[in-house]
Length: 229
Image (tube, rainbow, N blue to C red; front, top):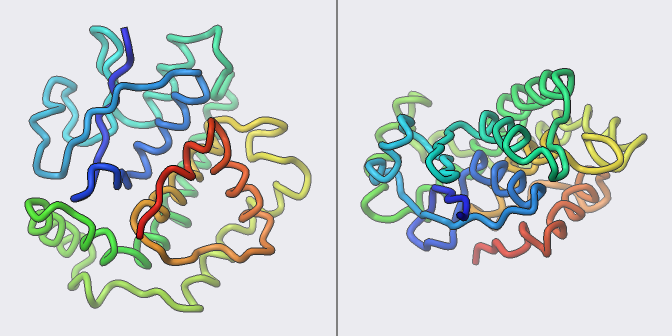
């Protein structure tokens, strides 16, 4: 029985931009699992009501439903112990939790400000009012007033990536010699950008960009299949 993955998409069903869903897509590929995709949009939450979660990602593995990207990664390690591990130990889980908190606040938040209008413009028409209402309530201003993409924001992102840059000077991946869930957490942030916008976020000579290019190539070019025109 295949694993079903419920993931978010824009007006184009191939425009799957959720960073959390991308973390799970990479985690599934790491385990050698090709999921059966189930595309939903912001206003189609009834599709995942069975999971008890109001948000994606959600996976169905037989009769088991799991929500929340981090919980899904933990589940995959427990359910598929003979496949390569994503985290491997309680210590690695704790370290990945730190990477998750750092990536969400220091990386994804910066990218979100740079592409919020790109996300909006790529949504299905039925989702746009919902997205505008909920996001403007969160940011306390209009989307058009909030978006900022300039050299200053790119430099903020560059500076915030310093810990990863230092790490990559001693090892090829965040998780060590091979990629693991910590890598997929950060990669989800960049896939969020790649699937939403044509803007450039990383400098060509940055070691983080070298890591990103390697991650795009992994699993038969999983990340490269996403292109926004």
